[in-house]
Amino acid sequence: MRYVLIGGSAAAVSAVEAIRSVDKLSPIDLFSDEKTPLFSRVLLPYYVAEELSKPLLNFRSADFFEENKVTAHIGVRVREIDPQSKTAAADDGNTYAYDKLLLATGGNAIIPKIPGVDKEGISPLKTMQDAENIYNFKGDRAVVIGAGSIGVESCISLMRRGVRVTLLEQLGHVLPTVFDDEAAGIIRNLIEQMGIEVITGERAIEFTGNGRVQSVVTSTGEIECDNVILSVGVRPAVELAEKAGIEIGMMGGITTDGGMMTSCQDIYAAGDVCETFDIARNQIFINAIWPMAVEQGRIAGSNMAGQDKQYGGSVRMNSIGNFIGIPAMSMGVTRTDECSYADEECHFQEIKKRTQNTYKKIILKNGCIVGAIFIGVGQTQRSGIISILLRRQIDVSDYIQALMSNNLNFMDILPLLRRYGDKFTEPEYKELMDTGL
Amino acid sequence: MQVIKVDPKKCTGCHQCELWCATEIASVAKELAGAINEEPQPVPRVYVEGKKLALQCRHCVEAPCLDACPNGTMRRDAETGLVYVHEPTCIACWMCVMVCPFGIINPSPTYKVAIKCDLCRNMGYPICAEVCPTQAITVEPRQDYRKVF
Ligand SMILES: Cc1cc2nc3c(=O)[nH]c(=O)nc-3n(C[C@H](O)[C@H](O)[C@H](O)COP(=O)(O)OP(=O)(O)OC[C@H]3O[C@@H](n4cnc5c(N)ncnc54)[C@H](O)[C@@H]3O)c2cc1C
Ligand code: SF4
Ligand code: SF4
Image (cartoon, rainbow over all chains, first blue to last red; front, side, top):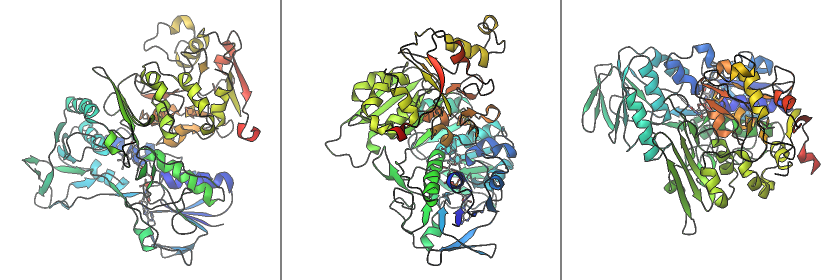
């Protein structure tokens, strides 16, 4: 068996581990066009903030490839794959034969078509190279465009470096895909208290400057700046797949079957490059987050090595971590109208609990959790209990009070798990069900 | 692999395990008299809540926390199969907290580190099992239920 993996990040590394757990010997060739291997993209804002030095960005030890007997082609781009001859052509001039191939090419940062966007001092934050460019930004005034989680983290990183930052978001509130209005309001206050200027409901329409960016022109004004970070989203990097005639879905990602195989025999896909079934939305969606890339990589890798694993579907999950000073996380949908295919039969419920500094919300569809938000100290530790109930789509109608309680703990929901025992077959659950409680 | 078993018929909810876990593992003093006066308060990795049953990390077979951790801080010991936090590299992103189905990872606000049970991997035998006055907590080999049924 010959494996070729394209991409060297979360999904590909997870696939390596899955392959090696069953197939210790077959050759694996892994390609990554980024020069730095094994760094975690999630940590780039910490690098920009000068909180972590480069060696600390690694998510696996430096000898990972060696230890797993992987021939790593770092800094090498795969130009083309040919499903007929089962080969991959790389820009090192060589052609590599495969029996099983994985596309884990991730996503590309979206560069909005705004006049002047190619000026110096404007960069997205996606690759290590981007992070280095931003790290070396000169000047003390920056604008961050797009208030998604990468945008918010970028702002805070720059602010910690002593830069004056303005965050510009065209929608009505910050973190529009992560939080509802109320949660976003809490976060916005915290960001503003840090000294970051937040402007919502306004879009950038031009970048001015002579070679180098000098200001951002918005729908109502102009913000002077030395640098701009673009964080308006990522788009699946499907160029290779498209050229090879692999099916691309409605959302613009590679489509796969339940075992992560693409429309093309023996070619698999995993991570940000894929669209998958979103359990909360009940529709195909792109959930470009780290944990999903790892899960999908594991399923793909296992199946490439001859096993038969099915992917249970993805869920969006975000944690803003320690960036804003208090824990804040959300999963699934943030508002009921994000659920597609809702018909009259669907019954939605939103349950909220708010104190001055904390906020908790659960969204139910026909009794099953489809979304949740947790903000503030004391609200987050038990969020994982909600996440497992969401992922397995358990009817929690008669447990709402327990789930909303500040004292929620796993033992409260054990009877519920036992009721749906066939959905919780792992030993770690059975061990507790066994206790008779 | 070895895992902790808890017998609810024996657990009286006396919180000895919590107390000793916090003292042995988390406190600076390592003895109770000193530990209770420490600031910040040492936190345990085992929770006796609601129903009488001590709950700690279940060391899941396919652990969601391992998938979620974006920098390899959450690790599995190759020999014992135990899942543990490599504390020096934790960035307090709480991704693991968000996915642990048992809710037993404590996002420590004081130390910016995820805190959870590692079955006392550096001590040989878990302190909670050692101190439980009724032997409600025991260490036993994991059974593969999927093979049994
Ligand atoms: C700044 C930032 C912060 C983030 N924060 C979080 C967070 O807090 N939580 C979270 O869950 N997620 C976060 N994410 C998202 C997370 O990083 C991604 O979901 C994850 O990295 C996806 O992994 P992947 O393996 O699918 O793809 P990627 O990480 O995108 O890796 C794909 C790799 O393949 C390479 N490649 C592409 N095409 C080729 C080719 N033809 N030949 C060779 N190599 C190729 C690319 O250069 C890239 O290195 C963040 C992302 C960014 C950018
Ligand atoms: S921390 Fe939670 S998810 Fe991780 S192994 Fe322990 S019980 Fe499982
Ligand atoms: S909080 Fe620490 S252990 Fe948990 S996911 Fe983040 S880095 Fe990993």
